[in-house]
Every structure is written in C-alpha cells, then in structure tokens.
Image 1 (cartoon, rainbow, N blue to C red):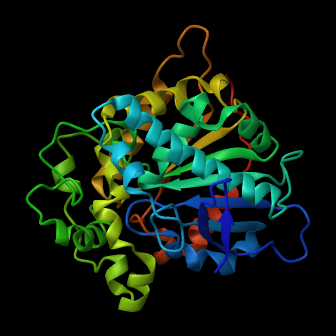
Image 2 (cartoon, rainbow, N blue to C red):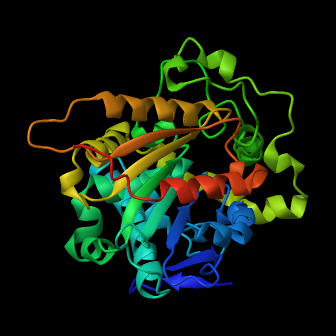
Length: 352
C-alpha cells in the first residue's frame, strides 16, 4: 500500500499507480484527485490501459480517506468556523496538500518534466475535488513561491472532471437538492444515497446551451439503468467508498460561497497570479448528476466573460463526454483514458 509523506508533519497520502508506460522514457503523468465519498480506488480500471496511451496514471486518496492521514478535530472545525477567512484558510490547506502530493510525484517518483510538448503532469480533479484545485490556482498564498516554482517545470494542464457547481460557489435557482445537502435525509443514510445518486444515469443534455433551470427537473430524472456502483460486488463498493467522511471532511460543502467564488474566479480570470502557463480543460459528462452539469454551464460563463483590465484569462477548453454518467472510469475506462491522453497535451492554439 504505497503512501507519500507530503510535509514535515508526517501527513500521508495513499495512492495507486499504473507505473511508467513500458519502454517509454518520456510520458505524461495524470494525477487524479477524487470527489466526495468515492475515493481513488474507483480509478483502478484505468491503470491497466494507461500505458497503451503513453500515460502514467496516479490516483490519490485525499486526507480523511482510506490509507491517508485523517483530519484532526481542530482542522475539521475550521471548515465551519464563523469567520469565513478561517474557512478560506482551511480550503487553502487542502489545496496545498494536493500541490504537495504533486511535488512528491514530480520529485520522488521521478516523472519526466514537460518539454517540447511532451512529458509533464496533468492534474485531474473530480467533482468536489476541484475545490482544492481552485484554491491552488486561485490564491497565491496556497502554494507560495517555493512550491509553485517546484511544480512549474511539470504541471501544464488541469483537467476539471465534472466540476460540480458548489465548487464554484454557484447554486442555480431550483428546488432540486442532492444527498449531502438534503436536510430531510437522515445523516446515517446520506452516504448510501449519495452512492446511488452520483452513479446513476440521467436524461442526457444535448449541449451546454441547453442547460437551463427550466430544463433541470427533466434531466435530473434517473434513467431505468442500474447505477454504476450498484452493479459492483459489495466488497468493491466498500473499498471504493469512505462513508465516514459524510460527517467529517464533507464539511467543505458548507464553506461560505464567497470563498468558493473567490478562488474559482481568480483561477479562471487571473492566470498571471499563479502558474500562468497552466491550461484548463473542463470535461463534463452529458448523463451525469445535475450539479456536475451545472458546473459546465458555469465554466461556459467564464469562457464568455471579458477579461478584467490588467488581468489575463487562463486558457480553458470545454469538452463534453457523450453518453456517459459521472463514472466513465468504471463504465468505459479506455474511453476516459483516451480522452485524458488527448486533452493532457498543451493547447498551443489558444490565443489570449
């Protein structure tokens, strides 16, 4: 069970690793940070096919998840502190942990740096995991100059995979809810309900332009298809999930929207603030849960927004994964790996 020690406090991060592609000295490394409740083990099916696409795939388990260092009670309390700047510092701490794991991958595992359009690292963040990415790229204090400089030769792409609207601090005007936010759902049932809800298949969206509050109720209806995680043996589901986080690190979902909005806006709209050469690709699944689809609409809004005076927008591309729910890594792992290989390359056609 490999773990990475990412700081001088002994913080451990568990990870799974496909290893370098056979017979390749220069390759791209994809580092995956997972979303809520479902951990990095859900990406196991991508590992055997990574090498065929010239990729090395590493999926980490965030703190509080299996094999990684739990949060202390004091750290968890910061997420719900009455002072939103304390909350913001807690989110930045998570962002720094993600960045420190990236540094471990780059420096300790010896992956090749980015050079002449090859090599380098792409960070893929799933769902709520994008909160840590926006903290990394949306506030220079998260990484500081030294850590940013360590990652600069390696990190070239950030892949926002089904980045849910709460990670942007955006909630559409709708009566729809979801298990973590449903106050009528008993807390002991929340995680199990989340597993079903998040891995179900929903009425597909034809385009980003079609995503409206009026259409949300129709597309939030699950199709008569067994959810991805419900088709797995129970021992696999237990290994891929950490129900205990529901009352612990899931508290990040309660952080003030002002904090989320601030980090996301800066990450998109002020590229020069942190790692200006890092590009973004937002990948959204057309049959995924409604909060993930609404996240694609938020990204589309950023793409259409004019740059502020004296600031440069970050390079961003929006990609729809067709005929896919939120778990293509379980349903069609090779399809996802193919897309990761395609979109982890630098977007040299982007114009500022």
